[in-house]
Length: 149
Image (cartoon, rainbow, N blue to C red):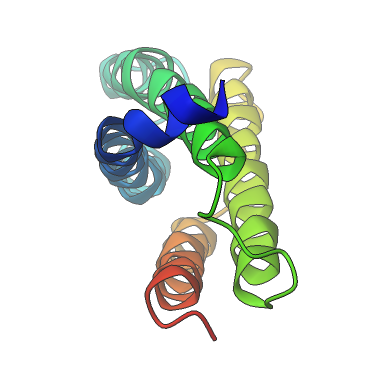
């Protein structure tokens, strides 16, 4: 099995990067939709229904599959011999950041349900601030993997 993973490494890495790009796009865009949803619509109006449809499709059709494939290809990379040196710090900082990114994804999913149920309690400002979290995590992940600090 390890020989197969080593042979498929360039493909696995390529699909992992593509998955991460799609996931990150959604993690950047969904909070921005929440900002506009909060500031430009009222519960039950036409814009509310439009925002809910856009948020649902982004989450279910793009973000969830991208997160799952990111995890799948990432775990395959971890299992590929010679790729991860667990005695270094970088795989741990990356792992913690990926877990935080996954938590953020789930938090966004819960906020979407708040809009569906008409109980959103967060302001546009809160969503703007939370929109910075994936950027910080991305910086940590890229530096961890490339610089291997």
